[in-house]
Length: 217
Length: 323
Image 1: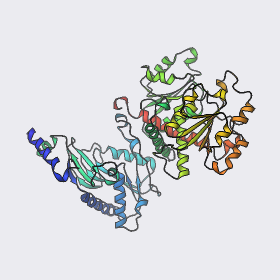
Image 2: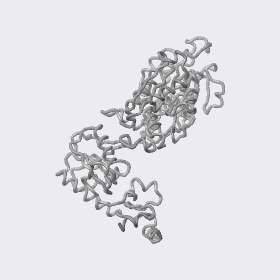
Image 3: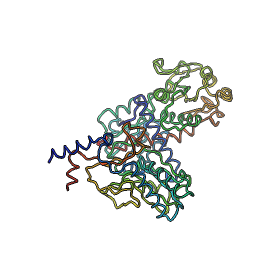
């Protein structure tokens, strides 16, 4: 059993198409683009139009996703100017695990010029997991203003929620085990820094051996 | 980083990291709710064995904006006047539950002593020790200068160092912990520093510092520096006469009206005046210069809160076990 798992893992990483992307790729660049297009239309549909929409990305990878979503919204509805509805919301100082983690430097918070009071704020993040990041984001939002509605859009929902939080718009529901890691790589954040970066993708990384066990369960 | 004792220990990366974090803290100070929950439930003790207005208030405001509890301690009116030692005072505060101790002491090395001994576990921030160092003042000076240079160049200040900048520091270098901290920090960040003072107010060994030294303020100003930092003559630390008269000092090493008129020439277009405060108007700086729009004194005070928030956050946010 143990040898079979090891062989399995070895043959997968050796596959030519995935030599730079270790782990199991679950969303390709084209999949990500399609999911964002759908989410953009869902946002417009849920809001019954483009009125008062503000997209706030959560650093690091939520922000480029928010920018991409804003462009897709602008493409779908010409009355939207993409750069005027998108912002970044830093949540570092609002985390509930600050004292248990090594010190993190904060990122800038940038709001659109129109502010967020009485707007429909869509929080955008890459992976929804425990829900604690979103709780921190809601706290951060309260200190900045009073939106009319707050919604949540995520590229991947991997389950394992620890708080009563759900996403309104999901790119892909991805059942995972808590031992696995979901890795999102985007050109904007990872392209310049990572020499092995080829294209946008979402992959699941498993600790050695655990992957097969999880799948046979 | 566990303690902040000296700017000499800071690498360029550390220093830029503190300034960048301060940049985000400054954004909070512009918001409607000027408060962050980052240090909720932590306690900062301001342990001041020497008088201070702006440093203590600045640290207090910084700690409160990060939601920490603040205990202010002044040596006057405490058991120190009954003869209690630094060790006993510090351990008393630790027993009360201090997570960080901000200390100002007339003896150089007192913060270092608290940090390296096992007297207390709390993070130690040096808020001025004798004539040794005052790191947060140097950090806020660098922050103010970096923002000014970025504004002039039209570039973002985050991530930048001070490469190519020239700073002239004038006055009582001998007794100035601000000058020492600034020499180390500004040169670490790539700036060039020139110290200007009467020979009697320069410390022994200054020739080994990474900076130029001059006795002639007018000659130093001929180079049209980016910033001129005027220091106060620390009469309370002077047990001898270091110059013949205050009028002579003011004429030769003060930024009086006549010397300030030179700043109207094009070479000085973007030169700013810094002063760590408190200013003695009429001695090292004239009111015209102090109240001009070149003077960054009030910006320095405002930036001081942001820089101290950054320092407290970086030292305190992670508990010992997570570091």
